[in-house]
Length: 169
Image (cartoon, rainbow, N blue to C red; front, side):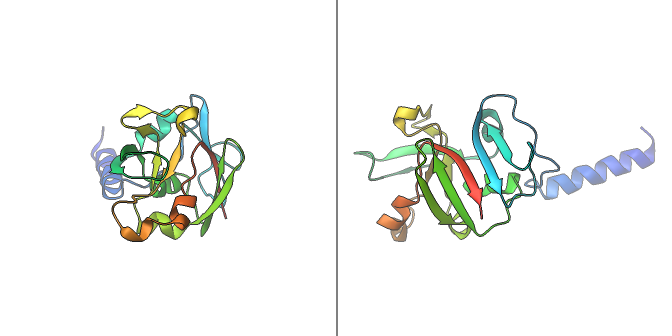
């Protein structure tokens, strides 16, 4: 590699290291699509939408927390990427999200929630993949025990389980 190319490669690497959340292009899913983002996105990987398989979600930074929810009798551990990281990967540019579940349940939530709180797109429950019968394969979960303001019906209603799609409005 000549010095000019080496300098360019080093510069490009430095830029990517300084901004690790920056995505040059969203790869196409290789496996079964588990989540589709549509609407106001700038990084589609299939026509006008961003599709993710489970492997793509696993490659994003993973976070986890244990929290009490109204749906389980005891605190449970949830793990997955932050919802804001998934939105960033798709280049989401809206102010509102419409989450859509496998049974076509729909709920809206403000994008601001994903910035103010570490909202997870949980893919694991107690370190195990979630089956559909266990609210999986994906579940939007707020860190209810981290902030008392989150322990109310408004935020519980925004926690869509069996998530299949998000429309960015």
